Amino acid sequence: MSDSYAIRPKLLVMGDALRDIYMHGSWSPRNGALRFKPEDILEFDGGAANTLANARAILGDKAEVIGWTNKEPLRLYRFIDQEVRESYVQIATDSCLSLPKVWGQTFLDGIIISDYNKGTVNKPMPHLVPVSPWVIVDSRYRSLHTDMLNLGSTRIWRCTGDEFDGDWALNFNYTLRTDGANTIHLMKNDEGKLKLVARWNIPQIPVVDTCGAGDTFTAMLGAWLIMHPRIADPYMADNKLTEFDWKIIKAVPSCIAAAQEVCMKKYTAITTERL
Image (cartoon, rainbow, N blue to C red; front, side, top):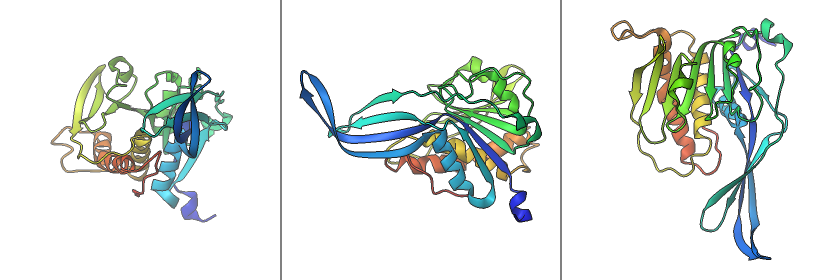
């Protein structure tokens, strides 16, 4: 192993892996009930598995991206008929994992916790200490046990407009609230009150499928942060922004570009944006 390989930054993506299954076909009555006849079935990595795949694609060999997810993904079915209507059936499996004993001996450059609603990281884990400069939490569900936030020195929550909750946001140093085609807001926890740091208007695009866009946004944010551990800007002092404030501000345009690219593709897609 070369020295350059050995010193690559390390990003951990953990949480519930999903398997997004798109079933194209048609519905028809049979024995008094509607039955779905599949004609084409496509499968893609979803949830934490999609976040992991995007992070690996974005970073390539510039960083070591470690995946720690359930071995049997949760299977999420999308039944798409000829009228392009969607319905969902989710078959849950046990995805609970135990933290390995090496946490206290391993230092990471960043941690992303993604899709944690089905048991992977919602157990109490006392006595955890920071093993990373930051931890990003991504998902609508708030079943994540707050012990897990102790793994990172700086805590970031990436949520959508409908998912935002002011009380939950106070568990974090930063909240990055995306809202589809609407304005993105970056808020900071300032002594128990949320303070607006920055906002972005989103360029309008032809949307094909939004599935996985949030995973991609978060993957790019994590990738950008580990590739830019230090940053300085002449406007920091004038705007009373900290270095970490400015790092997130600089990262967001790349996150928007990656997320919008997958929105213009069918199904759960992987971005071609690279760092």
